[in-house]
Image (cartoon, helix red, strand yellow):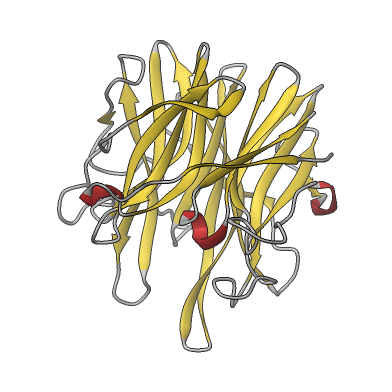
Length: 310
């Protein structure tokens, strides 16, 4: 497949204390009729992430209709899993409620951070959200002792299916602690209580790969298709050749996947806002076209753009 880039469409302007930099991790909600809502993470003057959104014309996302001017959730209480930041990762409509899954950040001493997944619910079509609880719904387990992060959820035949980022280790590389993470699979009967068997969906390609993140899944003609971001283990912040690229995989059952990164059909540009990295893809379909929203340079500091594929 081939993706045709449509350019940068949104970034924050730093006019408030809560949105000083970054429009990161775009998550599109297409269930608004003639408009789409795109959630994103932005950072405040203390470098803590908050969640907000903007709305665009359905199928024409360069036409921005509305920009929300406040965060939709507050940071957690002191000592909770989301006291240091929140980032959107998946949104699901179910029984007249919107389920917004988000990553909660907390800081640690021995490693830089700890991530787990929380849930916020809306009963008024997204006008307001309330946290399901003060704790995460995806936390540590005896067999997943590190952090987990981005998640993509779909519902099929009453089964909630999730593909989520799971950290497998921390390693010191050139005096810098680096996380290693890949994508695992889990199921739930209700979107809240999850059965996690440690099933690996997308694993490391080789020993030089260090991160696989932000699964985004479509099912077309019985075939599961996944887009995600992957990077090398080190120097991915400053080295263009080691930084994030968008990959692609296929599966017949959503569990066993075959990586086909060579078919992703999109790469960094020669210059501009996405010339150093492309990352955090979120894909949707509309009138026979696929739309991919993604971040470019600086993990979202350069904003959100999109591309189209037939």
